[in-house]
Image (cartoon, rainbow over all chains, first blue to last red; front, side, top):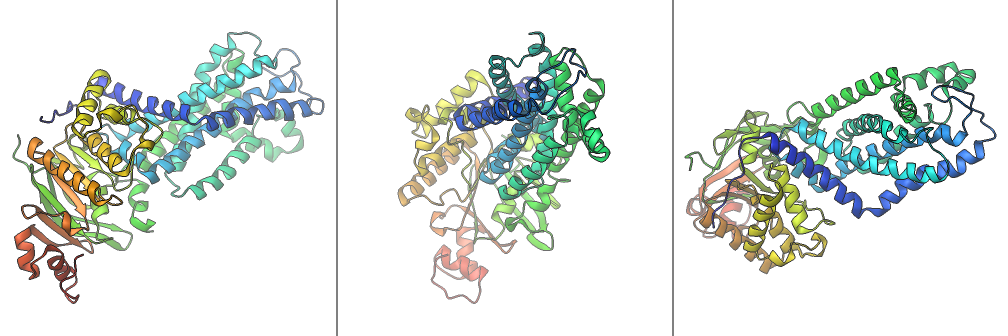
Length: 281
Length: 251
């Protein structure tokens, strides 16, 4: 028997196959990690069932767009919890990149003849696909809890917003993953990134309330890209577009992706400096 | 068949900060031949592999796979390259077939063709009946064979193996070597086999000895013995890299 070479030219079909392959593998891994799915689902539900119920009485939310009537606090924080699912997922898939790189699976990905940017985008889309599964599972449970958008169309109109915010949070994690070599480092970074981003945003309280107590915090929240991911999702659930948030999320996603591609580029990148045995320098 | 060698490394140097990992390294791994890359731990073997696989770029010099420069034409070079890394890189939770299909997809091979190629290779490596099993259930030797099958899926002309026998028992080691040599004979691939175990080298193999980032010897086994002034490969290698060391000890 003699070997048959693969098609040597990179065809459009080949791009599609390799993209699908990466998404498919991520999906398979996700299915095998039931614990990951469960914790991804339980985390926001704890917030929804316990935190929101407890604070319902304390935190009154006045009528602010996109809401046209008074809404329950649970309804208000649902978009923030959705974004939190994606934030965790984005950082978790980057965590798997760091882990992958250690066990070498990342190297298998990177010896593909397809360009690095394509492989990283594929990896990113795979993470987004997994986050969508988690988000819709959450929305389903929330529906039974009577936390629903005003129209069922909201479940559809939120989809593009979820893809974009998933891309942004994933790209952010990807860019960060190139900076960290060890899991321990990354774990602490998750604490330093996830909590500040989540709490200094409009996820748990409307920004006008923040402004009343601290103008500085208000400004931080306004410049936090996570706030814009939350608002983009919030408006999309009600079939509306928050244009400022759309621009910020798209812009930040693009910037993070470019940073990640540069970081993983073999010549300009950080792997060249950090890849040495013993992590020289 | 092209006339370019499977792998050509020309005057490659690479440094991590101030430490030079590779210093002016040149070597050739011809097509259809077994070339052993011999070196002790830290000699620079893994760094060289990282450069060939484009994990990072060679700072100076050139690396060509079947004539294609890794830096200027990375896609063509990588499409002709199969690699088995030192660390295991299979997804343990996925089945053997799923692992192979994933790799095929990364090379733009999908669907029925990917499954066909994977089945043919598994057949060849005596793993046809394990295709549907999770990798976790395989033995170390079987995992290595799956990794070699995976590296061959896209029909590369160069096969790189970074200390593939580490952690295997003697029987699995022998089998793996025999299978690799059979590949060379049947398919004409060029093999670069990094090792620190001299008993894996046969009389007809090419040998490149790496020591502290430099090529200490490059040639055939007879030449190595002559230059080291010893009858066996291990002693000759030690004599070359550690001139003061006692002779007669295998590396």
